[in-house]
Image 1 (spheres, rainbow, N blue to C red):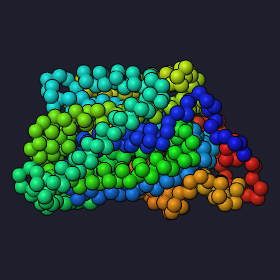
Image 2: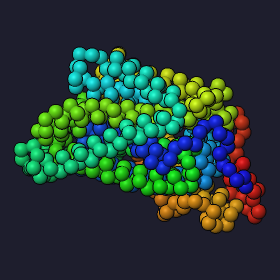
Image 3: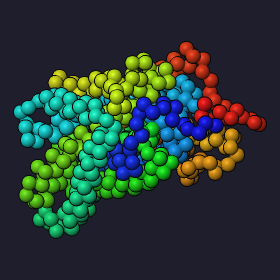
Image 4: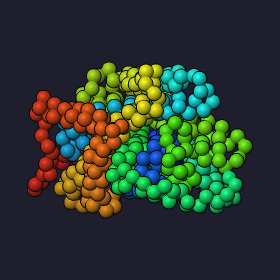
Length: 472
């Protein structure tokens, strides 16, 4: 076995320390899915339904992330799960996973700049959302042109603003529920308002699960960032532990507070539920400050997503699964052509110039959520294969720097939940079309590559396996 698993040499610079790795991943996870899509979830499934959906998805993400961390500490590369799928399952799956994930984050970029534009309407109701989307796209492109260290430092502070905002929101929300702020104690009365907590039944929970999945999409960024982190064997597990608990606390806690303070019939995506809650708190200028913070937050998520997408496209090119021009980097280690292509797809945000911005937002949300689910399915299945291949070659797990708990049940549970959510997206008219287009597109990528290159499913070797099976 080779002593280094960095198959891409030193083109991408390993300059991200543990605090930057954790915050970049957290920055990718906390964005419009929490600040804007949470209103859609509460309105569709009620406060109880939204809480259940987000809690189940968070439970699933825990197992996805532990499996990914096990693989990322063994082979920390920019390609992450695309590379792992290629080596441990089938090169054709790696091809499909890589292109799917690139498109997922490129579309997410469009989601985030649309969300930012919607938030700007709070102050400038007469300026079209498309104008703000264009401004934000240019800004994110400029930020990603910087070296990875400068990018990481900038994202650290962006993500830090989000973390502080969510913590303050949770504190203010609890004080409002108790009546210390906002005039009177709301308690949990909205959890039984007009048929709540589950006004539209269990099917509505499955229907909005894709929104919950989109909200938590970005946690897997940890696997991408591992390729540019210092000492990944130590950095990545440490960052993963911090990431998981923060995500569970922030998402489940925030949904619980939103459901308690805002009647489910009043929730939606036109305005952030966070802004509405702070308006009701009675704190002077709180809503304006929070609106500004949320705009920086969704742009931070788009910033992390642009980083992830450009690195995955770069990795595809280095493995000859994308045009070689995407494998070129600048002197500061930035894959410029891959970045340009990513921002190009983000221009789908300009559809707001032709359709209602809330409609475009839900379209892009559905596409991004579905492609994210494909990624999670692939990670969980690949982890199952990785562990079997590793044991077949080494006999025990003593050589791994991180061992995922609950194997194999954790990855199996993640596969089952993720599969149910994927099927459930057909229920929602807003996401149904994304399934009809997304599933055949992913299958075409996988099957087409398999037929063209006659790839084979990697089997667990019997007897004495080749020594380079895992890291060749």
